[in-house]
Image (cartoon, rainbow, N blue to C red; front, side, top):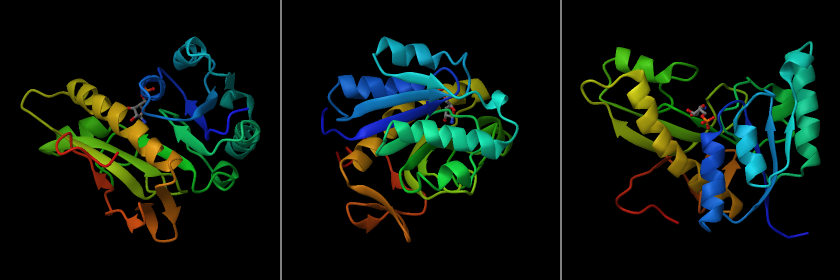
Length: 222
Ligand code: GRF
């Protein structure tokens, strides 16, 4: 068995962020073991991406549970079996309760397609357009019981230009997700990123309330 740190990735759908992690690993940018890719949705097309990469997959179908808590307990038990050091929510479309959050507190990251604290929840791109915003973006954050409200780790911005629709904006933002999410995971796996009582800390310093401001230029810390 290798001594590498272990990653579990939870998905519900197409898994393009999962693919970004696989690609980062293959490019030598992420040193880890992919312990498990798990979906709550048996039809998630992202499961095929994991299988193609030789990663163990499983499904815990939320429809088979009477309550959210019962699903979360089963999910937590299955994820714990994989002994992850870090759990990545990558388009995992279930709201999680303390049954899941407590056992993985401090090692749970999510990606949310808005410039948090703006637009937690759904339809983020349309909401940014409706508000007449001049930019949109994406935030990787630690997960806490507050929906999309845990301490931000890193944020990337994209300009909103005339003619943008929710679809064009989603495409631009997704490209940024694929860059900043593996980067945040890398910081965590290297022991540089931790969640403390004060918030998210990178290299011993508290990150700003909106996370590290990612920019393609200049190069971020690697
Ligand atoms: C992404 O837009 C992510 O921000 C949101 O769900 C979507 C997942 O996409 N949380 P994918 O399944 O990773 O392609």
